[in-house]
Length: 546
Ligand code: NAD
Image (cartoon, rainbow, N blue to C red; front, side, top):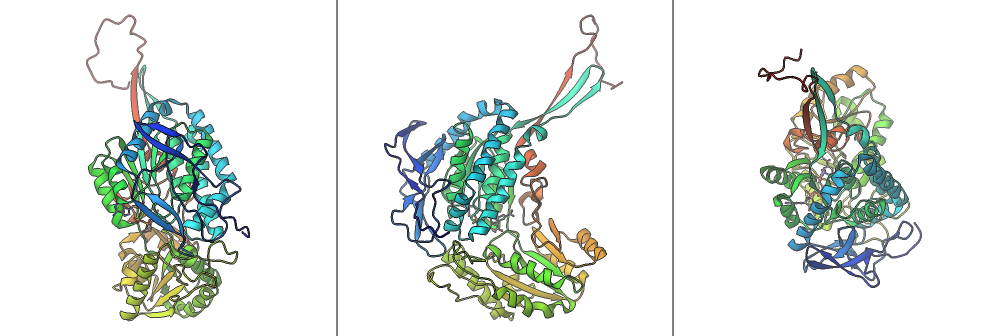
């Protein structure tokens, strides 16, 4: 990543033309990055430009006076300003999606599949561009940002199987009578995304929502919307008609608008419990379908018979990768028996990780998202000290050469933690590993099941029966056996449990349940009676299926 080209988020197109959308005139702009030209350094951007919104396949400049400043987490230089879209702009997005729906619903599934094939291919062509936007705005390393894109790309690839998963069923239920089921789109749907996977989470929503025939309004995180804007451009290039995918911006106001807008039939949300529980409640009260994936506290139970080296590498990668800002970060160790003696070795390996700006080739983890997030994480570390835990490895105060102003926290390990401590009760969402000690597998299971979250869990053991007992009794939704981050690929679904998912986990993202979420089943029962032409007697009894 040696090239020091500085490319800002957008540039006004030469001769930019106004767009007539629902009576208002918005100024059209274009993204200034391309598949081969995009930022590759953390240098200060000289001409910072505002992030546009996207309606009717056009990038538009907001007329708002309210912006959210977005800073590079490695330097805190300003990268772009994200508009809080005005109500008129939000309304225009809804109207665009409403206008587009009837024709998109009526396109053949084969046509929508072809659009999805092109979308997949464009994501591959723009993979580095998307990853670079993530590194600049979110802070994760370039290699890890490529993985963020890949995990979303895989959902888009799976969505290409739409002709198969949109098939209905048919059964002859009585003589001359059959029932068929059809899967129909819901209409206009919305997605509200978190900051930590700027490409993957929009891609959990865009492909399945659209290939099933819905039109979508996406609200990326106001902290890093750049990847979503690139995806919007790729949607347009892939052949999505105007209005099928729209992108709007803002914080709570935009969310409230989407929750209260009657034309929106379903909301997909990924983010924190605070926002998600509110969104689930208000969206459901307004009669919308809501799928909501929330926060986590993922545990690993470590058994003395495990492959120690594999365990240490796994935990160091899964606790500190992406600076711990993954909903499936393995942030809590439950050391069974003598395995607590291994913690100094875990600390040694964690210390060898390179904390640096994401475009630096040696970086293993980058900064955390904002100075406020850094302050919150540091306050949790301090609380652990005050509550009697031991800071075995302290990452506070670290600064890599050349980046004195980033939001840095190096890997931190807190040991002798007990369940009543704040560092155990709260999701930390930073490069901090908390470690508890227990004596037996039973105690480990009891401790983990008592935790209110249930996103992911892992066990490290070489015993099949031990792993099987754990698998049966553990209440977390995604279980790894010697696998630290067991996120299922899109032929399965993302299956969080307990408070890690709203609504008891009835709706889950991607896979077959994802298709169910975005479609309404309709059953049609038909009678083409062979006797119709000649019968003169009414049938008054219920069919007997004889
Ligand atoms: P967040 O809840 O702060 O923000 C998510 C979205 O909600 C953003 O678009 C934001 O604008 C909006 N929002 C935030 N607060 C709101 C409020 N009070 N009212 C209305 N809207 C609001 O989450 P984040 O910090 O961006 O993301 C990190 C969180 O997401 C972590 O808790 C993480 O565990 C969780 N997460 C969960 C999964 C999963 O699949 N379970 C995946 C990724 C992230």
